Length: 300
Image 1: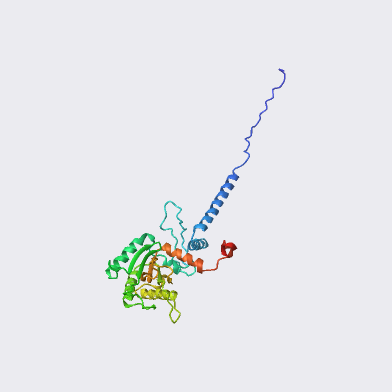
Image 2: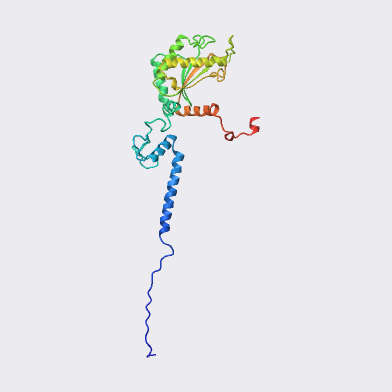
């Protein structure tokens, strides 16, 4: 044993790499970023209005936003940031026609006072009507009421002082002056206006075969014309209809003179939009059959 040569082995230890490198982390981060951008685009498409979508499209078509592009160069702030910037708002003042959807007439009409100011409208109407001598505490044939649709002015017929000539849509001079005064007051506001004509339940058919439906419609239209002469733009007229005796003011006496009336309603924004929606559904474009969830038993 003492004669054997001592052999020393040096083992070089190598540091082994892990099972995976760091490339997968970069790939995962890129994937997460892409998915976040994808879902952000889906969210914007879902919540943005047509005008905002058009502006977004224009921004990506021309991010620098030169004056000829017709779009804002600023990204749209949709209200998700903690502090909303006043400088990053959608620029709807587009110089070129067709670059975004034009403001429709119905949208212009709906930009009047909303439901929060209905009390103010009511007070203003009462104050101005009294100031012009068109309404006083003893007078009962004019009533101002707050309804779910807005502020309604109702002109009730008086047998001793009728609004219209008998069986006619021709206004009496006093009633015409009252409507002219009402028109001058309504001209100061911006709300859309609905006018309805009503008759009592007494049957009426003359030699021209004009009945209560024709009479109520013609009277509502006569009131519209005089109100427009008082200064109200015809663009604010949202609805002019004749309802004959279908909605009596005095339900206990269908033949009462109160039921012969003209109603003028200043519509709130919400009421106007609801009315448009109902009218579109009833009288607008044809619905697809799939949109109607009806069975034959529901119809027949």
